[in-house]
Image (cartoon, rainbow, N blue to C red; front, side, top):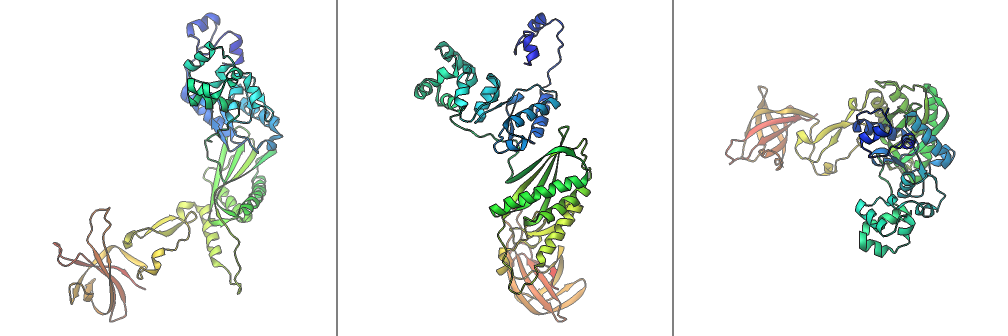
Length: 459
């Protein structure tokens, strides 16, 4: 109920006929719960400018954990005033309350006068509220009123043991939470990132140079925080808050953890220039937020005594720049998978999201060729004994005499997939010095006759 409707004598839950009797020229419109929910989500997204810890509170409220954020807006009073002004942009009439715990703030804003409660005074402020502020079940509230307990103070003065015995432990816990004696943290609609830095601007900005200048300042501040924690960032996200309430987020990734602000700034410049939908400032951005979405341990690097340059950093920088310019899906990297079958041993992933990975099986797995045939090509082979390497084989109408052979390397099919015959792999060399990777599919004695294939070529 808005204050104007309340002054006309309307109340929540009033029948439509009674409402029209009290206000004959009442305008009635069909309810739109989906539209209301969409509006609340839009406001929630916009109000994340005040704090990353923001969540919906029922169908008609928001709850913000502004711990450590109030100084960005001139203190608690300034933050509350700006939140009310922002709500006016959406055509909303709101009431705000600030208290030490979420439950105390909810009680004061829904059943009290709202406003700012001094630190440590939550219990005093909430005690003056009606017993409905406890938001217990209707039957429990009716029982409390019949017992003469019409205010929170009257319930607070009763022993918790007696309250739990009559209404259950949940009711006793609810009383302590509403009074601010127990703090239950909120669950934000977006989990907070490990490192977040904000810049609230006195005047909106709209040019690319101003945007990059603000990002440069935020990256410097974020680098100091990451260095203090011994961390480096892998995923950086810039949030641009427009004056009209729209929020645009741009994300960049790096191939390795970094605290190098100029490097990340160059990636943002490349990404902003390559956006399919350009960054539209509208009437300007009045706040910019930099979030380090993913972090990793980043210890100091010992310089080699011979001072040989580390070329791997140059390669990772090139991958990051290409990914920012062309998109992550355009720059790929091979990454090992936990399987022994050669054709499934690698997969392509975004290069700037994957770690350069060393396969732990490198010490035990025999050498594999870089060039594999997909699918393996059949050959005609002749072996001296059933489980021995081939003496000669014919491939693409050319006869090859085997002079050296090594193997077998036996690889069984994966039991969780469709049954596949066992493979025996051999590394062979012909009289001309060419080396091949052959395998026999199936074992002698199986119902099906074993077949020979060539799977790859060694350089």
